[in-house]
Length: 452
Image 1: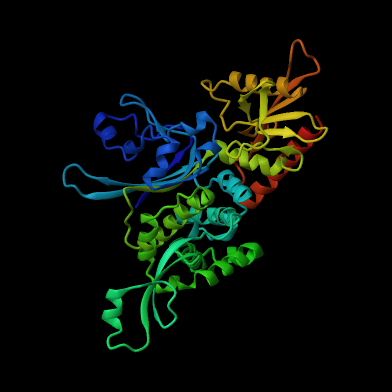
Image 2 (image 1 turned 60 degrees about the vertical axis):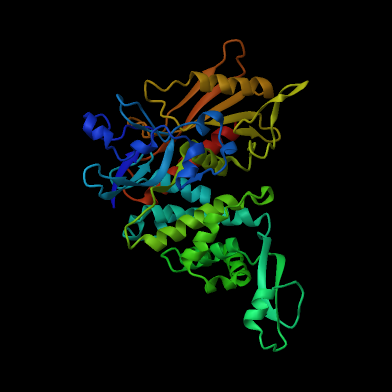
């Protein structure tokens, strides 16, 4: 399978060539597909629920462009695999793309892996050798598993009604006449019957068990032993669903594909089920070089950057939750219809509101005007004198430091808006050096924003 490297918010190489090339562009089938439709294409998306994104990001397409324009990658990071069929001989080929951040070099994307490490608490690069990291798709799938696994188990073990067939003398259900005649004639003291039970011994638990076993058999096996909580939960699930060994991997996959999770109480199990299916199907087909029509794993870049900044600011800032409608702010005292959710609101005496934007403000076509007005509205509503716009950018080549800017309001000299970039060093020789540099930038951000 061929893999090409793309960058977020950048043109797809070759998309502006002749009409013949354009018509056979490998990602033409995904052009203008939004976050809402990507999940239906076999792609694991983060965040999984549309409500976790604002309206603009939720409707942003993966690839944009018309038949006469360049095709641009949207605000997404990750891996996509597409099955293609040649028009002449109907031969099937496979195309894969690794969408990196715009801070990627020709060999490494340290910033993407670092954000994933902070958000998902899993060190991909430090866990694997260079050869093992070559399977980028599987690496990204596995690094997402601990977070979704723990989030789902917060709701408790998944239970559902199942029908079990029994053949013993302890009758406690509906007698199965046909099976009784077939198996218990002449009568030997046993009765064939069925019971319907609300149990955690079900196909979804089997799916999770099979995924844990796949992780143990992969280069990521140490992720279970290094995290005591994760290891304890995994062993508990394996004890409950030990009957999964009676079935083949494809039997478990087929049952879960036929019965996706819809129960409102167990919604957190939906993304875990999708992720486990992707992991097992990849493992089952990796030696055959075959994929479905479309599959992959994609992270919304704006969401990932916001979650990364949340890891930095969590001790001093509240992070309102749109999907669960927690810590919402009212715009009007007599109307609850107009709620808004700033990214970060200072706790206690820290009267600062912050907003994150994964934008390249160095481009001429990216305007910061609306973003500044948004922060100004937050400051007015919360009666704060400081607002901060946080975004990633490369280090200034002249100073070797990230760029910052202070904007003073005309009629309110005490109120200021700050543009603060987290400097990303793209020239770091290795990942260890990159982490040292960005740790220093994080300390500077925390010190700056808490002293406003």
